[in-house]
Length: 509
Image (tube, rainbow, N blue to C red; front, side, top):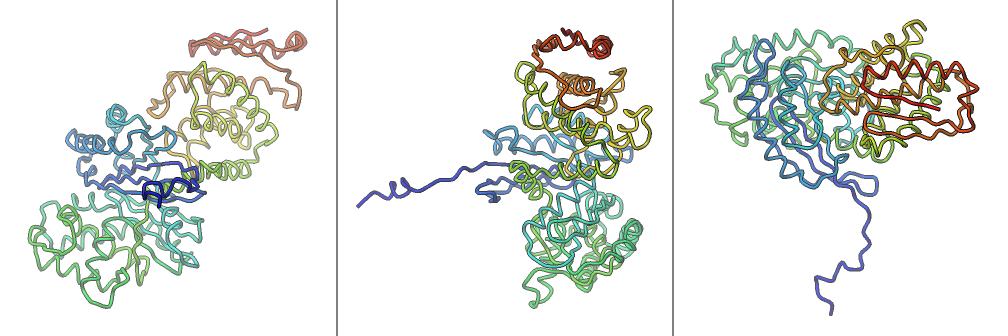
């Protein structure tokens, strides 16, 4: 009889990719580790740590050193769980507090010393989309659904059907920020609840009529705050085994809080001591949601932003990138000359592939950002051909780009802004996800891709031999092609002058 240790020796194994998503939230940091096998995601484990980052945000949107240190200490713990992960298999997203903090870059610089992965600050709309994706992949129901996620600093609202999010909004109200505003001293009074609920209702006035008109069949709540409230609602009566909450439940919970008079007097079975301080704010916000959006019953889903990020990584690894759909939609909306965009894309990718190793600009994200910039650099043509680069920059900077984080969107708009004519380095923003030398090289490649396709014709470029050093690039065109192209030669001479602004030398023959 074979040994038990030999039992799996002949078992077939399939290739699996280990991935991780870290959500740097305003209340908690959440890490989810999973693996992608046979096109599906398996969640392996989760880590959650209360940080209350939003507690350190003052009225001038400056994040306190104490709050930063709490966050960095948590990242030190998380770093142990991420050892050995490949760069493209980890995604770190930051939400409301780092969106608002004027000194967010100080935190991110310190974070990069702890974790060798970029921290992405995502917009409220992108956060909402990823939350919906997490729910859509884990909750099975039919018809349209409303998803609400109460975070520490913001609350996201999404109406969608199946895997498609149809309306997305992020409102500036959260359990940590509202605790600071209305329950800072710990006193639980009817007046404090009323002020908090009224403030939330004022925020909801921005969306309630549109959302009510759109309608939904199911309402789902995510986040730890809603989970705690649903658990408390279950304890109110035995007939709530499935995990949902009603307005009557919320009113009763509010009464229990007011009867206790102070947070220190609350003894709530099954609720962690760390959750109790923000519970009153969460109940107030949820009451406003039920009243303004006329919600009858809200179910709870454990899946949220980090699961959405994991499922998005699975799509990107399977080459079903959501950004492809975003770019296609934008190209259609702004009547992009797709044939020219494809020419610039193909030339830029050819140059990139020949330079990336020597220039040390490899990596899926760098390549993708250059590709999207090549395809979208002329979106501004619909506004005016004169100053197209400035119009393209404005559109890419201000439109909702699903699938792109804030810094990726900023890089796209920068590449579009300087894809031709003078380069003004003093106007470049500071990036922490992309090294300055990488930004310069991606811009140089895009500019050459645009210049070499200035004739907007197919099949006119010969083979090009490319050699690079750290700050130099040399182009050698086959068959003395350049000697018969005096205008392109002149353009390249002028481009060599422009590139000196980036401290790059361009030679050609």
